[in-house]
Image (cartoon, rainbow, N blue to C red; front, side, top):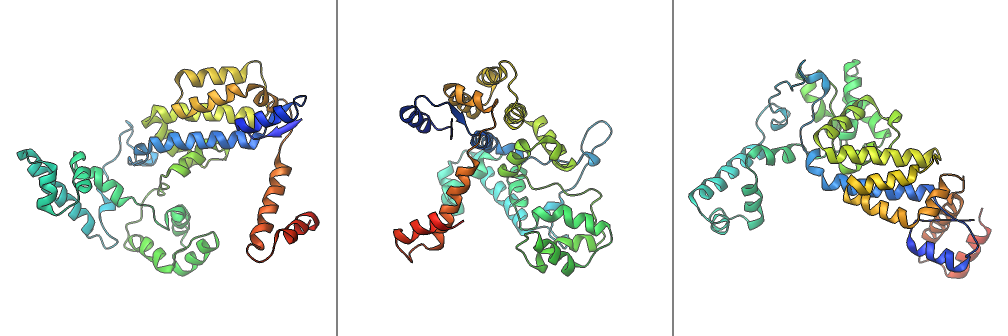
Length: 330
């Protein structure tokens, strides 16, 4: 048995070196390839991630979103942010000469702006399209908003204590970052619902690839709403979870893999179709992984150990010492 990566060069090398051996695709690498394809799909549809998602608690009975004036366009003191005012003014300065028939090159010269900046403002029909990206940039506090919200609602309002807690969880900011985030709460403008997590390509990919039962209620609602806005993400989520379930639980029902490949090639996104075509060429090894428990985890662990030893002594010794450390270290 040869357990290997799904790359074609590994398949050809194993076939040439040991034609009598049975080849098995490693389950982790197969899921890793699937995650990379899903990430490329989500990245191509990242515009959907910029749309304003609303917690289900903020919706009316008929499913519409309650009016929520742009709090993100105000600073922590409730004053209009200078960036917002400048963006609206510049959008008007660009579109007024466009309506008169001026060229983009002339507008850029008159406003002393680069051509790319003028193109970006000209493509935006409304300044709101530009403001959403500007007012929803990722910050150091994004991953800890839910944590801070829940503890604030429990009555724990000491910014220094909360900062120490989230620093133990990996927060790289200081107490002033937490104080700025909590200032609206002290001004009695506490949000009724917990804030939504910041939408990034990596985060959405993680939601899709993770087991559904391990998602939190907020993550599940956000992913559901994203799928409602984008049929492409909905089908990608469905196909990714089907394949992940087959690999993780070693499900080898009759023609299950063939049906998945056929479905993806029929109406899947192009990144998944590329993956399916590669799996079709490596069908025997992938089918074997669904019926056996072989894995290359031990080999990958040794590779990681060797890399660690190599980096510990980089530039300080020769190959002879590296060889002895690899052979003798546990």
